[in-house]
Image 1 (cartoon, rainbow, N blue to C red):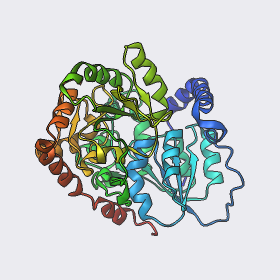
Image 2 (cartoon, rainbow, N blue to C red):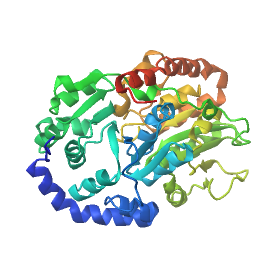
Image 3 (cartoon, rainbow, N blue to C red):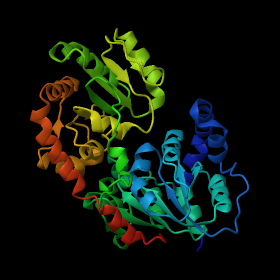
Length: 417
């Protein structure tokens, strides 16, 4: 194969942005990534890699959401795997799974030299890219090294979909010319075709987020997380916490005074900042990483710890799934659905349209216009637990209906398992 280089426009863009990317990498390394993050983002610091070892299957999952999406697939494959992430949080989630057959490194920045060093040190047989990651230099270098790439659970954000006539249209078309695409929906398949992928490259397989987790123990916990009843705001982002906390404080008189609002931020490292923001608004909150003892008069608990989200879902009276009160596009509503937890979301759920439509059709989710409606739903579910049980069971039934999707992906990908 000859090298299919990125377009000139993209190469110039990378050069222009290079100083900013380096500054960001330094900042992230100092913040939470560490030395390994810094060096590996430049294609260095891999240690003594034995290039004579058998070729390795490589899976790239950018951050926390992508790691959880592909985890059922990773759990089914027992051959040695190389898994890359871009975020330290995604790496930490992967580490918590304690998968002996998985080696983790950070994905290099999309610089030609970093990508070449990555493929030089890693003896990769093929690569699976989870969801939306289109990196022209990475794809080009894989093509030059005869490493076939497949985008799995392929989806496109609204912003990327609109690039079919944008400044990067030719860049996307050039990059996609070298990969196979297993799309999660017909709409996503059309989006990739509009970006320049040919019909022969694209197959509609389904949404891997429906896949059943391998470890059933993640769906329930024997010991209660809290002694008090609670509702959950999960995977929240900046500005959502303050909206919900203010409404919770205003409506708290209508609920059992022992009840709690538990907030699990999408990025746990934001926990201390959330507590400060709430304090500035006159709202007290307790941080789980600092204490598990909650004062009797506390109304809000910030769970800034990793690996507990499914447990929180399984014991909550109801939940809000974040990223949906802001234009983030939402997060996976199937996680609480599997735990039979009543669900409310905001109206920004464009990243999960198919899942939301499926739950709406089953009358298994509520779409709120604002934080006031979200908290009203949570309080109603807390006060009328039995009335919301049928809704939760419908959500669970809808979630398990497509759990065999991982088998469909394995049939398409045919790894040596």
